[in-house]
Image (cartoon, rainbow, N blue to C red; front, side, top):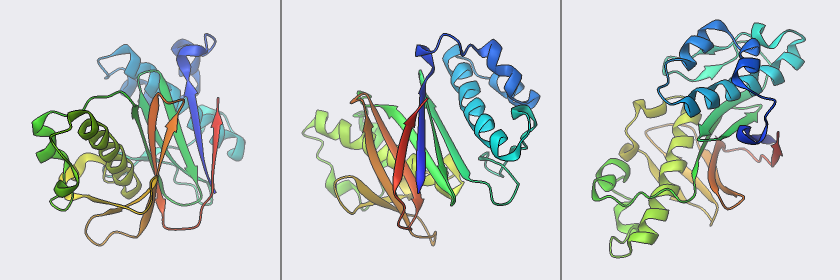
Length: 219
């Protein structure tokens, strides 16, 4: 099974950045300080805190001492065998972390995000997807574009390529109302689940094509 952990850090007055920096590594502190917006700094720290806290329990060590490295395209991972894989996404005050025994990718965006600018089509849509979107209904088009964006982000995080692959090179195929699959080159088969959290957030979780149930846990 895979697990999705969400944390609205704006509701927790005890989880200040000054407190949590004691749990993350010095390179992560330096990376956090490179963000321009204070909310992005906080979200980055919160995400790494969640990952390090969970892995430290399995490794019986201090959170700061958990080895976390970055892949060629910047995806964080723990190089120790037999530990769960993870993926982090944050937006504004919400942080989500996906956990699985296999590779996983997650993405989150506010459900009211507007993506109906004309230039979005060329950046976002794969040639096979263009026929499914009707520019005559801007509101509906915006919702569909947002779903597509989140699905593709999660898929690329699963593959470990991030935005090193253009979004319009990835095709999203719908299986059911909330289940999709991503297609790009000869990558392994995958399943992408779409969720709504409190009707305020849209979340996509991409996993390899295995029969995995899911669990959601709020911190």
